[in-house]
Image (cartoon, rainbow, N blue to C red):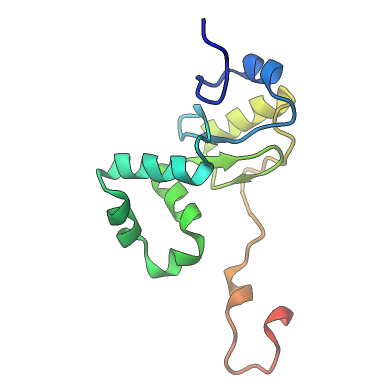
Length: 140
C-alpha cells in the first residue's frame, strides 16, 4: 500500500490525518477534488489544454487581451474549476462545487467563506484611469 500524499486521489479523512493547516486543490465542476500539483494554475492549464485539444501555445494565443491581466481566472473559466486554498477560493462555483466546499468546511479543512454569489472584491474599473479626471489612480 502506497503512502497518502499530494499525488493520491483526494480523501477527506486521509487528508486530515496527513496534512495540518494545508489545502491547495482545484474542484472540478462535478465536485471532484484534485490536489493542485504542481500548482493551481499549471493544473488548470493542463486541464484546459486537454479539454480543448490545444497546446499551451494555442491556449495562450486564444486568451483575449482583456484577460491578459488575469489569465488564471480565464483558464479556470474554461475548465469550470475553482481553485481553493485554506481560507479562500477563486472562481465561480456551481452547486456541486459549493457542496464540496461545505464538506471541506464541515471537516475542518476549509476555513474560508462560502458564498453562493462569489465576489473576490477585485474591481477592474479601479485600475482604469479616467482620462477626464484629475484624480490619481488610488482614489478610484
